[in-house]
Image 1: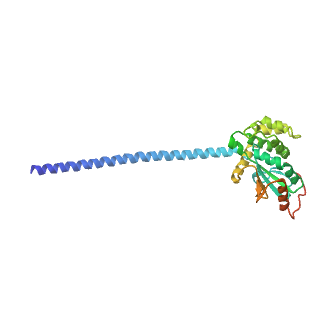
Image 2: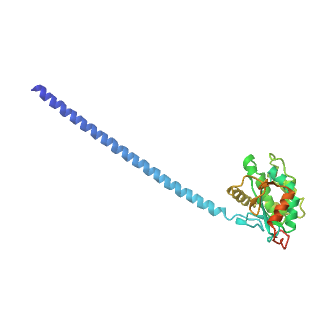
Length: 273
């Protein structure tokens, strides 16, 4: 009888201990849930505060950024084109270049005179776009500084002349001497009437830096393979068009074919700023 009584007592104690353990487990879970909920609440609040701060900072930045200064006479989408030649030319040669790009200089040396001849005779207009890929690849700021200076020359109606001076005096690709504004101003002395206080201030102040950066972004978004990129009426012609390699003779032939049955421009001048 005593043995049975002892068993019942042990069983009761075991049940009581199991119940207590269940109660302790519930309490641990309750406390864990409370802490977790508090942490989630803090994180959520931090996220909201961070989002508000980020948006506030973005609004401040956007409001302070203001419109991008555009060179006088710039044309095309977002004013990113510096045009040489008449508006009513029957064909358009679009050229993307970087003033530090050695292949761009080779392209200019090979085709500068031919392109000028075609533009002056009203057969084409040339839409120049500026990029800064060498700065991105090799570091430095010569591409940006030279492009800004070229845009400053556009204000004075001397983009084409200064563009040619920059390529004729292009440093080695790894030499970032175009990053020196004084060098860019010195080269402006080769263009009659360009080295003025207005031009110097434009170069020193980086007036068109944001415009150049916007142009470089457009280059990247255009999916182009590199500089120079040359398109005749939207069709790539560098380094070849179809199966024909680019040459002076081929360039003239391609323009003549594109202009067949169309009259040359009535005015051979570059648009005035």
